[in-house]
Length: 170
Image 1 (spheres, rainbow, N blue to C red):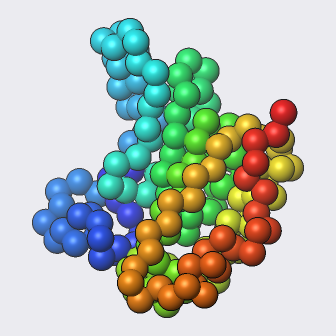
Image 2: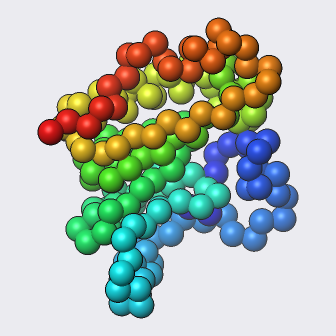
């Protein structure tokens, strides 16, 4: 993804005004790049389907994940605010989903301009339910960056009340 739906204060993409690319890679283009990577790097062990953009904006992401996972484990990093195709993404079984959370509650909404804390919690719960529903072995990493104004009570809330079930099932 060459575009993002947020303007995060700590992200170069959110702070750059003269970005020349703002698109999404098509499945066909990705397939060509993927095949070249596989041919040129025989010991390729992982593909990360993200870099300064929001991959969940790409409607073809589930197909891209399926193609990749047939040969090589892949990971997707997301702000988890665009969830229109979340079910299909979970069904495509990426090896990992990384979720970035900058701050909590009010701090989160300031640091990740355009995001909403309550929606994040709902989306995390939905992701957890979908992983359980499809018995997915996808590993979920919630990467939380806390700030000095996130007090101890807020830091404890970041665990989301222990209601998420991102434990790998056998």
